[in-house]
Length: 276
Image 1 (cartoon, rainbow, N blue to C red):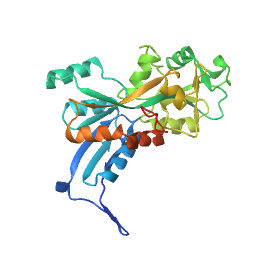
Image 2 (tube, rainbow, N blue to C red):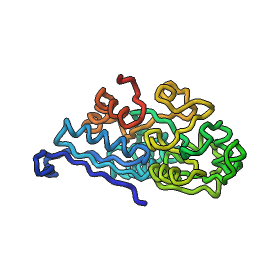
Image 3 (spheres, rainbow, N blue to C red):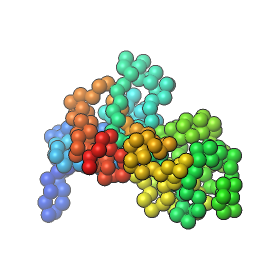
Image 4 (cartoon, one colour):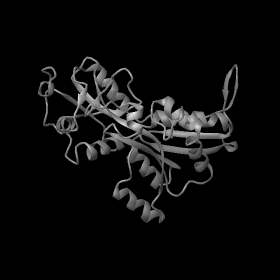
């Protein structure tokens, strides 16, 4: 399934619809990267352009790795990433730009474990997750569930969530060879809803209709994520090749404002600071 792309424009509004600003009268930002962050970036871009009518922001998913590559190639202004740069990616940035790049933390996320609402297993230990996603546990009855073969759903290798899960849960062990690779977080949610035997992972903002399981007895609630009590909490980032300036800086500064962080919260992620 190709990555969704959103071209967001804000023009004058009338009863007949929206009129696009001519391209030569707008300022443009191009952002690409994490599918986990796709809906968040769409919402932030829409919110920003409501108060900046001469801005045009292009948002594209495709995975953190593809976003980092596009940033290095100079095709975009900002990369949305759900993980830190890998050593090889940092080396490429340094060699090409004599810079280590610049990251901005814009939100926190729980890497949630998804199961079907009718699955009786709603709490996993970190050890169980490692054994399930590496293929050492293959049937739900092995951890107190029904006698069903576990259907393991994972993201593709270009996903920052795939890399994060492999590093922090599998501890660099290989994923289960029979795991099904699903291109987007939303597709994982859809698959879990259709299959009581499935288990997958993704961002906390997706799938309100499925179960976001406890891990080590701790739920992925906003407070548990904000204070790092939930075991698989992480930051979401925006990367630029150098310290943000001009349009990049104005947009990122707005994201960190009360207005921007309220959109982070409304989307289902955890603001960097409380906006209650």
